[in-house]
Length: 249
Image (cartoon, rainbow, N blue to C red):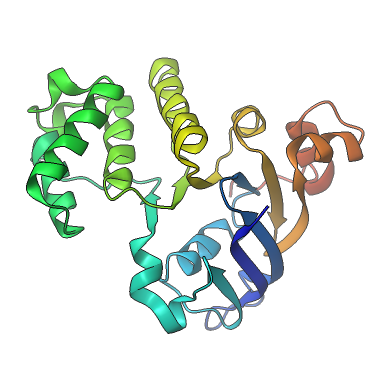
């Protein structure tokens, strides 16, 4: 497999922090893979994603995205990345269509192409009949589906998903995962996925890395991690490696 993302000895220490948020981690994300990044609260996942998106500069080490870095090719790197944040990144008093048209225009997508992309995605995710309702009237699951569309409009080569199904009903969760699987299988989209839903991660991700306290604890193919740790599931692997200490303070 060809590496699409190369993380090399990555370090990030925030000012006045007692320890690095990300501490000398290295791994590869293969092109066309679904890569799960798992870890407890405060493990360093959000800091890593911020560096991957070019929002934070590493204290040391590097992230190479399709042969380029944010330091030397910031615009090119950002153009091929799509982000679906945990927070709903939409304007509540605008309609779904208005939100997506605004976001698409920021990407520089031509009007006719943009309208088709929006219409196709709304149809696939079951939102076409509510396209002209304001976001504020949407349920949590519907907002999540629109959040996903917003991150897909420019057809990114790397899609970053931060808890994409948190707080949604079973139907919306399934619609989101089915759409992501199709994008991965049909178009070879590389996906980085973070979640606390470990059963979902096991089903969805071909590769998994677990980090804790900023350090990479283990990584590998999902089935191989389960086998190597003599466990029955990724949840068992996760608890075996990270322990039972509470992390929700």
